Length: 147
Image (cartoon, rainbow, N blue to C red; front, side):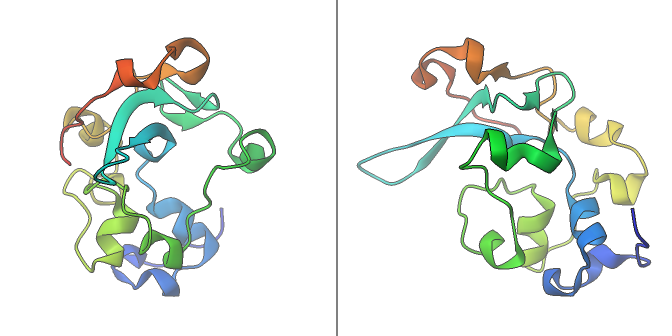
């Protein structure tokens, strides 16, 4: 990983270098979960069904570098796209910074540990099922803590 500037997460998203952008991610795993769109309202409904590349125990992508080769519709978030995607959780560091809000108190860049995120219930590790094992998405609708 390259050099990270002191308190880089307080900068506008557009000012971050590639390493800082990647480091901003808290690793919650919620963007890697399947969603259902309500056809009548357009609301996005969350599930606990993970992309086949997401490790259900760690909430980490098992092949992040090559993920688009295996999951062509996987989104590569950019500062522009973050402002357009409506389904990012309220706790998402990218969303919060795009909205000029601070990182959540549990974010590892503030605490130095991912444990606070897990204790706050913001991480999906240990609480998801792989899409390969899930069956119908409608059977897996959830409401995650923290928005």
